[in-house]
Image (cartoon, rainbow, N blue to C red; front, side, top):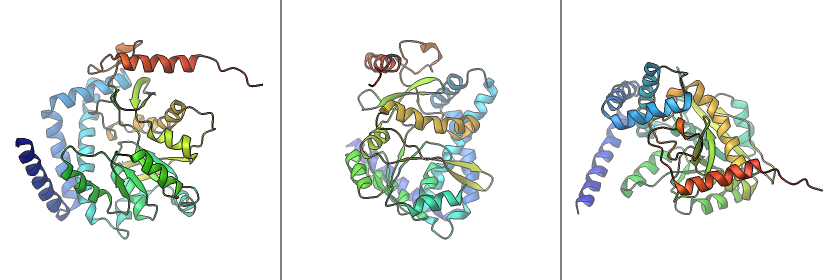
Length: 330
């Protein structure tokens, strides 16, 4: 009973918030995000410690403690800005979208648009900059498709956030049977989009890749879709700048039939890590990216990383696969 009341109250206040935010000027929201992000960073001790530990594990002594604190604080502020901008999304349309977000290479997008149905792509990105508006730009410009989103425990909020993400013409899909739905969409010539930096528990299907030299267990959905459909993977990233955001469409990734899912996942991740290294304040450092500590070289991992027999078994299996030479084909 208490949970039902709490869920109703959550829905009421978020719905009220969703009506108020689009009425505010965007520059006011940016100032609000900066202030609220500063407060959240200093008040949420647990998330702050996670962010600082992640930065130390990823960069070692490249940054001083003061510099890590600055990056972690700006990361919270950047996330707060993108969160408020998502609520402001109903004010976006095909005529004004270019004022807030644009493609770095317009010709590359036009070439991709011309082959949309013949070669639908598996779009991938990470929680960087305003990835929400980066995805929306494709939809507003006619390259609409299916995008993956997580379902909220309070399901009334799921429909609310779906509406925000679909103002551009994209169709948001929750994780239930999403693999089958995305597979069918690609077969019908409809592109799909996935965030690939969500880490998973051992109870969820996933795979291990190397991020900043550390083992990270992430989604495998894009690798399975590529393996089964042979469609190209399109990495893109949305970088904040003085004029709003710029979407960088990176080179298409194609794989041979013999490529393993681990190889596909690692190649995809390697396209994004240089951007995160260059603009670390735009990635989500307060998230537990490294949940598991491997059986070897575990001293670099953040304090929250735990040992797991299941993870160890998966890690050792991957290690064996990469160190065992393949027999020569005759």
